Image (cartoon, rainbow, N blue to C red):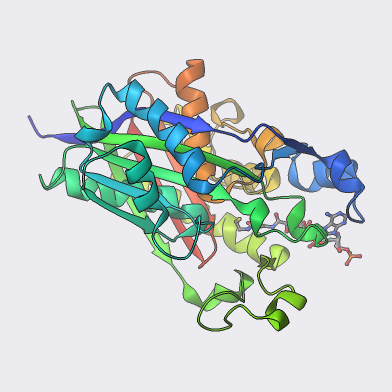
Length: 327
Ligand SMILES: CC(C)(COP(=O)(O)OP(=O)(O)OC[C@H]1O[C@@H](n2cnc3c(N)ncnc32)[C@H](O)[C@@H]1OP(=O)(O)O)[C@@H](O)C(=O)NCCC(=O)NCCS
């Protein structure tokens, strides 16, 4: 029987502190009504000063390993998808590997923003399928609050902190990843970016004074590209696997904006009750968004063995992708 690659365990971790729309009303010129109507978000999480991308990732990873029934020593590869690393050097994946007590396996970070977890899953799948590795830990981890300007009402209302992990490994067909499709279009790089702090504009008093280390977003321009891209790439994976929208049991789009989710769902013709959304509680956590949803669905029993699940994401780069899998 042909081998397949699937998810053996999931885990997530959210900081305790809740930042509500009413908290934000006190910080910028906004309102709970505007945020709720335009984004669907009511609250998001914000990490405490002692928490980092790697510390929360280790906690989420332990839960995923426990569900998978393996130990850190069984891991062959650790991929951490993040655009909010602990520090520029070394990789956050190296810190996670160290603190998990994994053996000296390969570990690296992957920067594909909100699409990063799907990019990571797809890389993991190739390594497992070709026989190089058996167990791969894929983490989506973001502490975006560290990069958000709480004076910029267009970004601070959207982004939140959160982390989730999944252990990928061999599964028995028909379970497993059926199709994936990934894209990047650098022409839109400056629609969503952090201009300073890298080699183009190294940290200085001047870059800090102009807020160059904060996330800048042209949200309105991204909106249409996001809807179109997620629709197209979702159709492509369904075509590859010869599946129709009405066969999808669970649709998990990146939680960017509830209006984007609704537009993509409608264009694809997926029934409303098949869509998972937690954006009201968690906001947009970039690459952590899809794995947090997955973990919630697994642990609540919403996702059952044999279910067909479609995941799609869009983010900075711009990047976009979709993964279709049978649970
Ligand atoms: C950011 C986003 C929520 C803004 O919503 P929008 O409906 O597009 O709003 P617009 O940018 O058109 O702004 C409309 C008005 O609301 C204002 N506004 C923006 N943010 C606001 C806020 N938090 N509170 C109140 N008013 C706000 C704008 O200043 C603008 O005012 P004006 O008409 O007087 O100029 C939305 O564009 C979005 O979600 N974009 C996609 C983001 C995305 O996909 N990113 C990639 C993945 S992370």
